[in-house]
Image 1: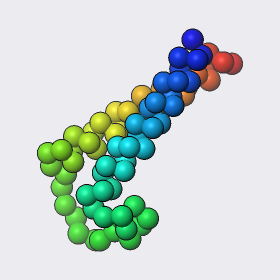
Image 2 (image 1 turned 45 degrees about the vertical axis):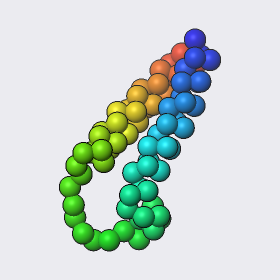
Image 3 (image 1 turned 180 degrees about the vertical axis):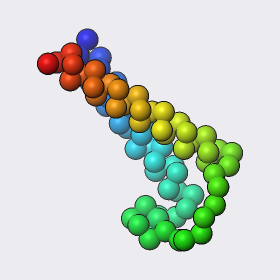
Image 4 (image 1 turned 90 degrees about the vertical axis):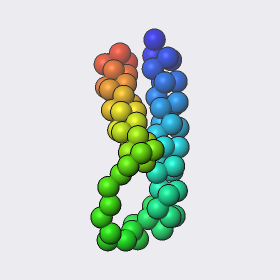
Length: 73
């Protein structure tokens, strides 16, 4: 059981990294390191979907981390 949880966490971690990289790709590499413009804009279409999926996958990763601690402890 623990092995399945750990493998799932690795896969989710890689997926989160890929999703974050896909989001920062549209706004330039400089924004990834903190030099973002001050223009406020709304997310639409694919950008909004990527944002929501990233939040969902991150929440799932967090829940799996808590489950892993409970199972191992």
